[in-house]
Image (cartoon, rainbow, N blue to C red):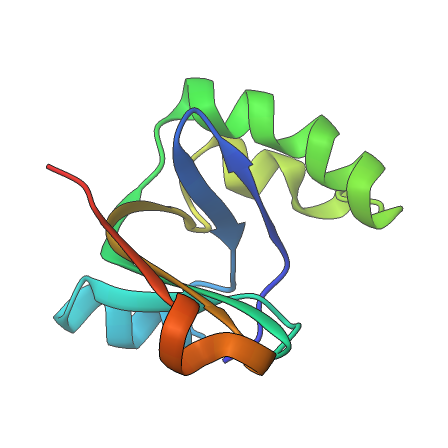
Length: 112
């Protein structure tokens, strides 16, 4: 599923509705994959999604609003009161796959 998000403190953060399919899937299985939108320079992040704490959410909101030029004011209270989820994906394995050279120059990083 496509998500808007951003990197913050070594994790990829994104928000979604509490009743969304993403939120319900992650409640059952926290393992997930996040990918870039550019297939010609693909980056694939395998990780574990955690619920972001309030401090991370406070930091996330203004950066997210600026990045996407999206007004979060109607959702801010629910996000900060933990009623709506913000997930933080901590990478375990990351793949870099340049389309033109994927057979010879693909890269894999493993995080502890």
